[in-house]
Length: 202
Image 1 (cartoon, rainbow, N blue to C red):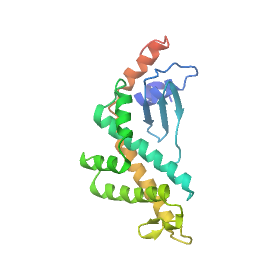
Image 2: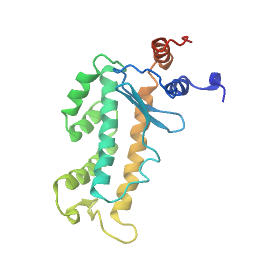
Image 3: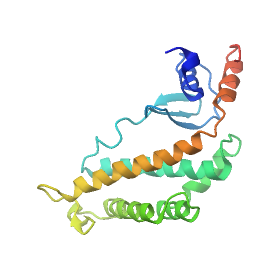
């Protein structure tokens, strides 16, 4: 595809793929492209991130907790964009502030600010109960999801429903985030990086 047919976001991602490119250390970005690819820019580094949503999710404690870390990251990014928009100078301070707020309260903030509706908040809190159980209970058999033992075996087991809900809610959160991401001036960012690297700005 010719570069002129690419969106500003796709052109920006293409620029970041250039080997040896110098990226400002204070630039922090989580990027979601039109086809669902995910990238992360932090501390002068650019890398492709998570793929295939939560299809890889297993019932292993560590695997589920890792998935929730991903949830917490995305929720934090939504809150960051809502508070300061895209700004590099205050990133560290706002990230420290968000990190000091527990995930339950972060979800409540999204609801209070009308970013998510009451139903989505309820569904997210149900997922959060599983996360808290895995983090604090020794026996996985003590952890329930929607009044069923999370790790039960057989058809229609609770974990399958949990995994399905994780996927659906993740996609809803990504859609919310992408709406905020559209406010970023990618052409301006690309030109700043081109200047740093002695390329001609466009």
